[in-house]
Amino acid sequence: MNIATTGALWLLLALPGQTSAAEPIVVNGALVTAIAQTDVPARAEGVLTKLHVVEGQSVKLDELLAEIDSREAELLLAKAEAEAVIAATSAKNDADLRYARKSAEVAKAELKRSQESIERFERSISQTELDKMVLEAERGVLAVESAEHELEVARQTLALKQAEVQVARETLARRRLSAPTSGVVTQLHRRSGEWVKPGDVVLRLMRVDPLRIEGFVSAATAARLKPGMSARFQAPISDEPSRDFVGKLTFVSPEVDPVNGEVRLFVEVNNRELLLRPGLRGTLTIDVRPAVNDKKASQE
Image (cartoon, rainbow, N blue to C red; front, side, top):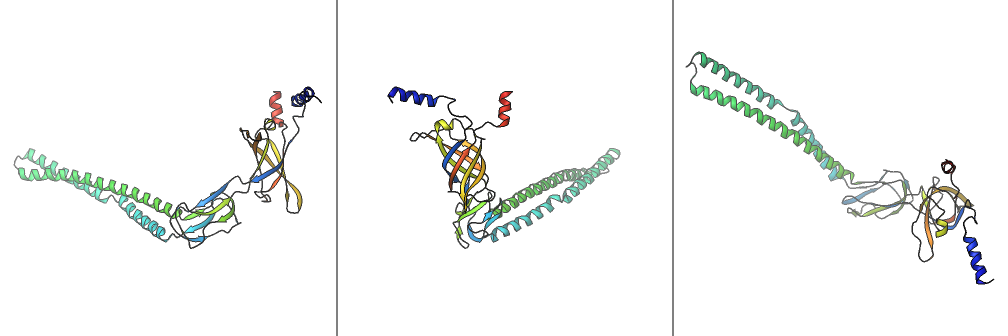
């Protein structure tokens, strides 16, 4: 076969329509990987008093994982809550304000009667006594303003104490490590009785449902792929020669490896029975046939 014939043959094979567009894409040696692995850190400084999990244990979202010594934080919270109760009592107590207002009304009324008396009888009240009454009326007004100010300060103090309660509660909450996601505890980095600081990794949590299947295809094959396509992953599980896991194509890399010309892809599969484990390899089959809805849309 000469060069011209060989070139013609390759050109014929490359022409569109020569291979079935509905033929599934098979990826051998696809690798099971975790979608998410989370290092759970300490958020406060102190002694790690309790570990509620062991390696290999499955946990749910927000499940308690570990605790840091919280005795001081609990006392600070109790103190803040008590001060908030006292502040609330002061903020609700307007007795001084009501008394000041009543005193001001009486002083104003007495001054008015004296002024009326002077109008009728010019020397019935001396000027000194009248000046004292005016001063007393002004003092009553100032007393009301002072009582209003004190009540407002009490209300602002209550708001401050309530904020301190929230801070104390958050400080206490930081001493309880909860699961940021459901998954399996894969490694304990710390043990009960050890001293930890904020940022120290206490344990590692791996999400095992769903899992990701990672594979590589040629750039030409990748052109046929679209996220959302159905996929099936086959891998040997226990005594079974193979087991099927259904999933969806979630990612096709926009980059082509310049060395081997391959494109990376991800398929997400359910693992509710927790049979798959990261590190397993198997065969990935992607159905490239258009969905029924896509066909209807194209016909319309």
